Image (cartoon, rainbow, N blue to C red; front, side, top):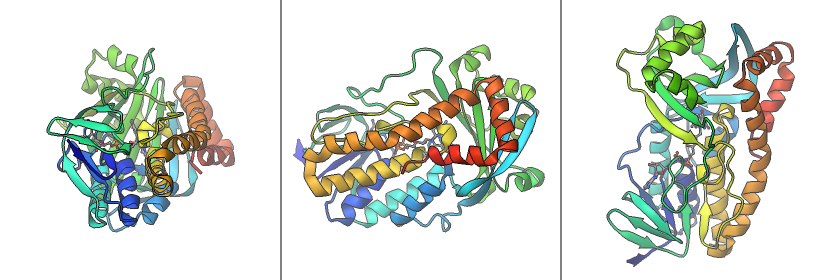
Length: 360
Ligand SMILES: Cc1cc2nc3c(=O)[nH]c(=O)nc-3n(C[C@H](O)[C@H](O)[C@H](O)COP(=O)(O)OP(=O)(O)OC[C@H]3O[C@@H](n4cnc5c(N)ncnc54)[C@H](O)[C@@H]3O)c2cc1C
């Protein structure tokens, strides 16, 4: 076994943010990542204004990556449509582009990266398929995926699933989507649609498992049912090529927060707090937790982990609670109508809610 500098499991936004801050201070962290080349992680690909600011501080120029500006939110619910300006400018960018840029930046600054699939953790030691690695400090940033021994509890009844496909919109749809993020609310979930670099649009849904079960367990059949029931969403889904791949992820533990940890183990990103994705703030939480944990380590070493985790859990509480409330309301038929009505009649209130779902 080799003893190394700080270990970071996962080169997503959280792991890379930690690697950038540590490497900038000369700490030579080692990123351990299963994918040799960044994939296109299942995600809405919406970068909030807070996410954009954090990326800038990490030295990432999202405009240079082709991020599409988003100034308005359009809400579709129960046959109604409402549009309102966002509290500040957001962006649409694919996770492939974002994760590639973050990884490149971490390596430029002196972080190392090895490809290995971690099978389990033992304290702050990583047990990999190829090699075991030990350090007195482990930054756990495996995101949506739990490693053995570090599982997060899941919603027992009707958990949330993620489903994503990419479409190439025609001229009319492209003009309609320009500058907007669309949220299509339906009974049991929502679909978010945003333009990304290169002119494609990302359609990402979070919905209750029971909807997929009703569609016979077939994601394509589920999309047909949703398109028939919600014509505006159907119009967007019609831009998908017949065989375009549909990515899925099961049982997202929305609302989960790591409230404490042991010395040496820093939990980051989705391993620290999982905000309901409707808020579009998960990447900001990933970047903030990575940066703050790295700074805590630079200031106090391995022993700083418990204080970092408790402080981070505290700051994540309000945005997670607000986003949880929003999700609970928006995924019910009467509630989604209410959200659309608020967007039409009290946009300032909805913008306040959007602000309260951001991490300070
Ligand atoms: C349906 C849905 C839509 C979303 N939409 C948005 C949105 O529009 N905007 C937003 O801000 N957030 C959104 N989110 C949330 C966002 O995707 C996450 O919060 C964010 O990806 C968390 O980043 P992370 O770095 O913690 O984890 P991840 O992005 O999951 O990265 C984890 C990394 O660890 C690696 N890894 C995992 N397991 C292992 C292993 N065993 N060995 C080695 N490597 C491993 C993975 O390959 C990956 O590179 C959405 C989430 C869902 C479910």
